Image (cartoon, rainbow, N blue to C red; front, side, top):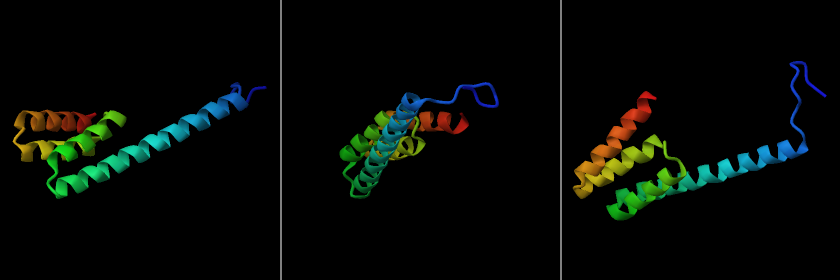
Length: 98
C-alpha cells in the first residue's frame, strides 16, 4: 500500500525502530544537560578540573554543543590553559557560522 505521494508508510518494525531512536536521543539529551549543569556548578565553585571533565562529557555526547565549548574554554582560561581555551573558542566560532 502506498500513500498519496506513492511512498510506502512505515510498518510496525520501522515505527518501533523510530521510537527506540527517539528514546535514545532523549536519553542522550538528558545526560548532556545533566553534565552541563554539573559543569556550571563546578565552574561556579572553582572546581575547574571537574568542570572540564563535565564539559568534556557533554561534548562526548554531543560533539557540536556550542555552550559546552564556551564554558570549557572559560574553565581552561581560569586554569591558565590558554592554548586549550583558544582551541575551544575556535571550535565555538566554527559552530556559530555553520
